[in-house]
Amino acid sequence: MNDNEHVEWQQPREMLIPRPTTWPLWVAFGITFIMLGLITHWIVALAGVVLFGISIVGWMGEMIRDGQADESHH
Image (cartoon, rainbow, N blue to C red; front, top):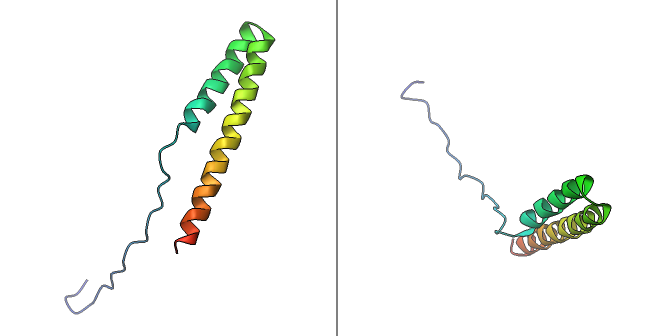
């Protein structure tokens, strides 16, 4: 690169970092209960499936709401 060449710098794009949430923890508990239920009793696995489903829906819903809130600020 010569001294005569100019490098055009651009502002970095804004990074959108999601806010902290406990939903991944509940998803992990759901998976744990499913696995425990496979070796213990089907009711434990069923509870894990329910917990997993509720957690995924809650987590995705929160992400969608946060995304819509971010878009409204632009």
